[in-house]
Image 1 (tube, helix red, strand yellow):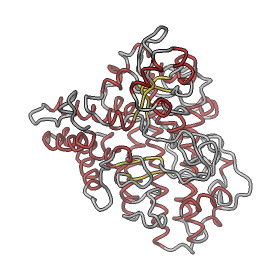
Image 2 (cartoon, rainbow, N blue to C red):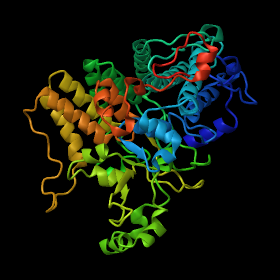
Image 3 (tube, one colour):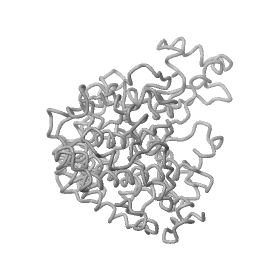
Image 4 (cartoon, rainbow, N blue to C red):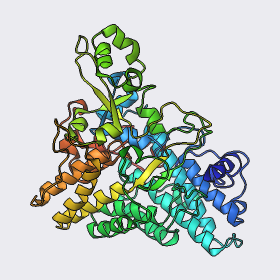
Length: 526
């Protein structure tokens, strides 16, 4: 099982992934762990090389249990930066408020410690893997293993660069472990970084297996294969406005019905090894503080939901809401850290089952000082209370089939195939449709033919907003790549005074102070 491999990596096979890292101080601060061995030893056999590359995934899960861009940070802070979430305590949480207001200060360590630093550490390790796997010093590796592991390293390198450019804009493009070549690298234009992503992902798709049987006896979907590379490549093409290739690659994934289908049950979409999953990350259930849960669950869920305490009986709920003291005696256990903005909540149409399946709420009394408002928050991941012994019921969902339908719908609309785009949107809407009731006799109706291209693209954006909320920064990145961010985010009261510099996070001050060729993003003075 992969879990056993993770244990080996964490305990033993840091094995040279990090050797020579201590010399790479100028680009990112990376400490060399104790008891490392040389890269040559780490890649001296098929088994050790496989363990070393599996260790790259372990890095994404943060062996010390801290959050990073690949296991919770992106979904949370990009949602605050967009129009999806607000901190329940408002200005009482200064770091969160910096993201939701767009005023990130020099004392905010999140962009550096949880995004930039971790991403570049992973990139360095991917570069080391590619160099070792392609070099003459590892003759014991067979060709198939060498090819597959190189593909995984290139996938993870492209994955890291995708989030770097979308958070920071232009970034240094580091493709070697040679410190002499990287120590004074300037920021490369985003388009150049995207071109490298396309190369890496195209090569990975050609190099990786087209199944999951190589991962574990359970065929866990927790390592990159051909379809993960193809799915991320489809997204990259969409972001580059290469709609023909976005259509081609997303169609390739969608067409593989032997491996991928949309889950009919919304409550199971994020379960481990669900057939909607193209790629998931597997957490190590023995690593605190998350254990068998996820950072998404820890970030978004209170100790108990309102329904878990009060139950489903309307009379019981009415009793708690009619007495402020009684309400406050239990609501402290149900307070979410973050809740939906009015803009996100209003995006859900009548009869959209995703609101009930993937979110829940804390109501409030209509008695002063309360206003009767309900605070909705994400519940795509179900565990807030975690266990070091139980198997994880959910893995981190990294790439899933629904996004591929939405990529294809947008590509079709941009290319003029409006009916084809609507057909893909209606597949997603059909899955999200609740049962008809007397109150909502026509829930989430299908979109009808005859819409203009502008309206179809607006429908795509709307469907992405309600399907992909609080997932991997989709909304924040969508607003930026489609040119809508200034209009949408600039109209929000909580982000005033608005300026476009809020769309990029600051380059870490440490990088600027140690490399004169790296300049800060506009709007930041540190």
